[in-house]
Image (cartoon, rainbow, N blue to C red; front, side):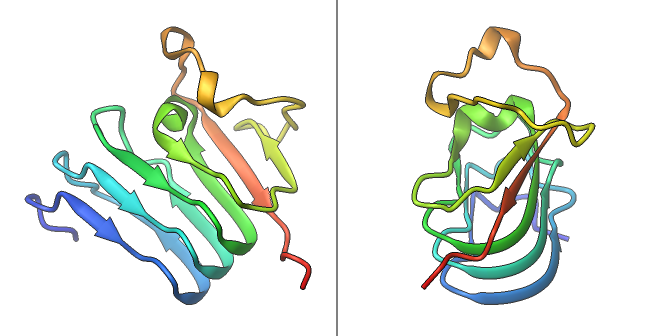
Length: 122
């Protein structure tokens, strides 16, 4: 369990295999950095809340697998520099377009977004 006083969590530049499921995210967590990883498996970020003032950085990863995240958190997520295969809704239906930087906070919903990453080609 993460300590309640944790304000930043940096899990960057690792080679990971398996599943990362972050549970019981402390309300004081402002920055979650998962950039620069070589990862195969699933990252489940559905327990992140809109109370998180900072950002979740998932940029510049070499990922093969999926990331599950609440759609309402997209206003704070950085996904630049990734090779994204598909973005799906909570029912695994593909979303044809998604503008993360201009996402309308007024219309955010609490359903899950699934982002699939293929392995980057060398």
